[in-house]
Length: 246
Image (cartoon, rainbow, N blue to C red; front, side):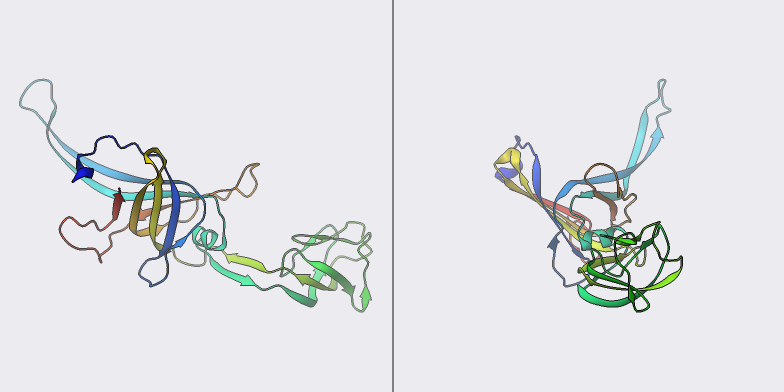
């Protein structure tokens, strides 16, 4: 019972965050560098005033937790994290040599290709190869048609290129995920001792903002509510979360 009697216990944690899909046999996988993990409790307090004497006060009260919530700010915007945060369907298009991808060209406009970061570009109108000089620029996001091009607006063009393997997320296409989340913390204020928190069932919400251009590192902040896990049972056993440390 030494830990129960311990008084001096400062905490300053670092560590890994792991997540897996609730109710499946899949792994709890690390999600990368996480800047903040915060658990909060929303409490409802009902009070009955004391009317037996002057001055008032509280005669009785009832406190109940309306909800427990978690907020996570992720620094690694990998495919899984990003897709979960925008309720998206994730996929990967393998890099390939693309031949005669069909598009319409407009002066001063961008042609978006199936793959990102194209190289070895061959640009044709019918059977004629169009030189890049004065006509177009190859950009990471596609082909930009220069305003002074010899092409005419709405010309049909064929573009051949080598495309990079491209991750794709179709946002707002699935329901919000329910996750199992574990924080594997190390207490820097106590010789690196473990501090582990298991969130049994988290209904993760959609990211409220995506700071695509901000002059700083982009983060991915999401919030979720801790839902009751019906698989947890027994006297003194939480259905929401558990904290362990040494």
